[in-house]
Image (tube, rainbow, N blue to C red; front, side, top):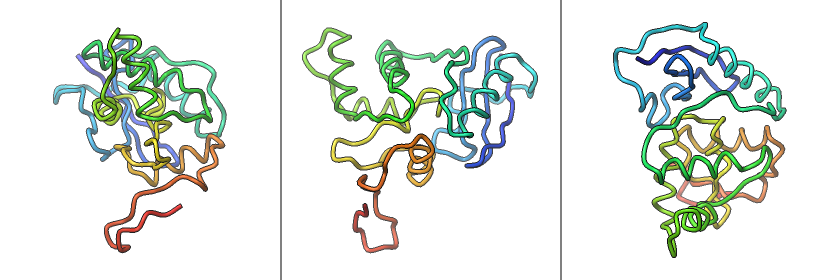
Length: 183
């Protein structure tokens, strides 16, 4: 059984999902893959301890500080997905990594010669616990901010909140601006 709670962030409404003990999902409402890990029979239960801890984490985060703890989370899926999640969790507040670096670390941890950065991108993009598992800290090797299910503008704002200098990072063009990348 999954339970749900809501959180109103400065960047939009969010939904938390949990199994009663662990946080299993955290999404900006309407983002790509929103509520991807829960089924339709989830019940609203806003006062579970894991939701209280998650709200405290989010309150601290949106004040611009490193919360310093991780609420209890459970990410279900393949060993590959769990390794990618573990690596994302190791990216410090205010720092970034790249899909290629994560792919190299996944290959190392799984005893493989190499791993596709695109496969890593798929796992990062489908991260069910945004912010806490910091997929927004993962950039393309060329410094571009592509690939955030919550939207590139939101990704840029999250990184700015963490003190990352985004002035030199590339953002993808909007559909109506002639197709040029901007710094």
